Each structure stands twice: as C-alpha cells, then as structure tokens.
Image (cartoon, rainbow, N blue to C red; front, side, top):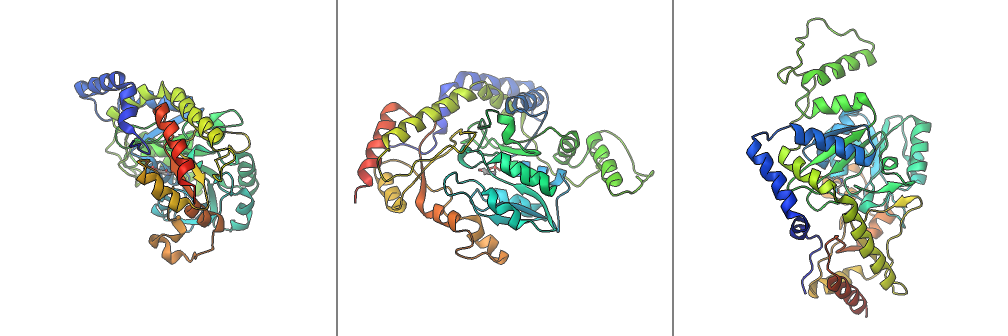
Length: 393
Ligand SMILES: Cc1ncc(COP(=O)(O)O)c(C=O)c1O
C-alpha cells in the first residue's frame, strides 16, 4: 500500500464537479483579477473565521508581510516569534526590515510558550507573532494579556489553523491581525497559491487593501494621510490625489488572489467543517489505537479546538520509525527538520545549538503521518498496524 502524507487529488475528487464548474465559470467570464468571486470569498471567509474585514492576497507569506507593514513595523523593530514553524513566518518579518526574536515553544502543545515572552521584550519590540502550529491554538488568553500590558500588537500566523477555535470561537484565534494561507495542502487549500489577512480594524484593513496593489487607490491615500497625522505632520497640499490604480501613495506589492482561486475556495469553504470533522475523526482513531504504546500523541491545548492540519507523533526513535514507515509505503516527515534559528539564512543572528532546547528536541523526535480527510479506513488501519510494527526494536 502507498499512502501519501497529503493527497490533493483525492481532495479535489470529492467535490470535483462543483470546483470544476466554478472554475469554468470564471474562465468563461474573462474576469480573472478581482471581481465578484474575490469580493465574495473575502466576505465569506472573514465571516467564517469571525472577522470584520478580509483582504485576500497572493499567498500566506505575503499576508504576514502585509500585516506587518499595515502596522508600520519595519527597520529597527523587533517581533517576538517562534523558530518552530515554517520558514516564511520569520522570513516575512525580515522582508519588512524588522528582526525576529525567537522564543521556545511548549513541549506539549508545540506552540509559543507565553512564559518566555516578557523576557524577550525590549524597547524595540513592536509585536508578538505566535503560530497556531499544526492547527493547534496558542494560549491566546495569556498572550493577549501580555500584549495588552506591554502595548504590543498581536499578529497571528494562522496559515495552518483555518477552522481552529479557542474558547469555542474561531475569532478568538485571530489577535489584532491574522494571516492565512490557502496553499493546496492546507485545511482550506486552493489550486495554486493564495492568502488572506483578517482584522476587525478598519485602518489595518485599508492599509492592506492598498499595499497589496502597489500602494494605490483611495485606501492608499487615506493610509498616507493617517501616517502623516500619526507623525504630527501636515499632509502636503501638492500631492496628486486620485482614487484609481494609477495614483500610488505607499510602496507596496503586487499580491492578489486570482478570481479562479477565489471561486474554487468559495466552493471548498462550504465543506470546510466536514473536512475538519474527518481530520478529527482520524485523530480520535489514531489516539485511541496508540494508547499504551511509546508514541506520544498530540494533545489539544486548554480551550483549543484543534483542526489537525498536521498530526504529529513524538517518539524517541522518530528517525528510525520514519525510515521504516516510508519503506512500508507510508509517507511521513518532520515539520520541520531544521528549526529556523539553525538555518543557514539565520547564521548571523547569533543563535546556537541549545538556544531553543524544546524546539531543537521536537525537530528530532516528532513526525507527521497522514491525517487528511479523505483517508480510507483500510489505510488508517494499515497506518496503525505499521506504527505498532515499526516501533518494535
Ligand atoms: C506556519 C506557516 N506560515 C506561513 C506560511 C506561508 O504560506 P504560503 O506558503 O501560502 O506563502 C506557511 C505555509 O506553508 C505556514 O505553514
């Protein structure tokens, strides 16, 4: 038997007629950039997650860049984040000129350890950027309280947590600004790249709307005016001001979600709860079957409703087990094998082996197995059987 870690074809097959019809409609419409499909998807996704404003963009990495820029975070600023995440979290912070300051994660939830935040705060700290890794929610209550106390922005990396809840509500996972990815394998994935910024703050929404289209339009003008007033400066009266896309007020980006993607995402969003339920069903089965073994199964953090983008097991012999599972046809892998602070790109940042002990340990002892919603029951049985067999010494 061959089982992929994430099977996108099967995801497409489940409701292929709906997706293909929606895609064909866009192809025939000739409206490929912006338009109704994009506007509607922004509204529907924001409403699903419980936010006031949704600003779609080209991918999840851009959504972090837009969030940071909309808050005026840049050169000289520090952002407290984790190293136990996908590279883009920290890369996006650097892309706006700011510095990521890494803290360790909790050894049971694998998310940012709130107890370490206050020690990492300096006069340069502008924001805290936790990651709801694997679909697990961070301890939002504690992190929010720290941000409020120190007057810091809370930006959440929700790339892996579409559908996750904290205190029974999806909106409780969002913070001041939330950043989503619709990379094809994600809980809600498109047929290419896509991302979204969610916020309840009109100024942040306005800045993102302009920044994603080269800093243009009325949203750019209003953002520029606000920036002048925040600095206590008078807005110059000689600036050419128009509301169309050829008036640029900010240095932004070209980062748009295609109408084709939006149309497909709208159809998938209708079924998202079903997809998450199936992930959770698989998890219940795996957790139950692995009770009493040496595998440490993932926990749901307090107040968290986990959406299980990734189901990661922990085992002291993770490397050998992965080799054996692969040999048995079961795809698996560590998310992520090299923590960001140990990557070559971060060599000049001064971190060393032992800087983040929990993160470093997780990179050696955890590994993800297939948990996607369309897993067949005989595949699940085979995975369980093999997990038990391959862990024998
Ligand atoms: C935690 C995290 N942050 C950011 C990103 C970046 O998203 P994208 O690949 O859509 O740019 C990803 C995507 O894999 C991710 O998992």
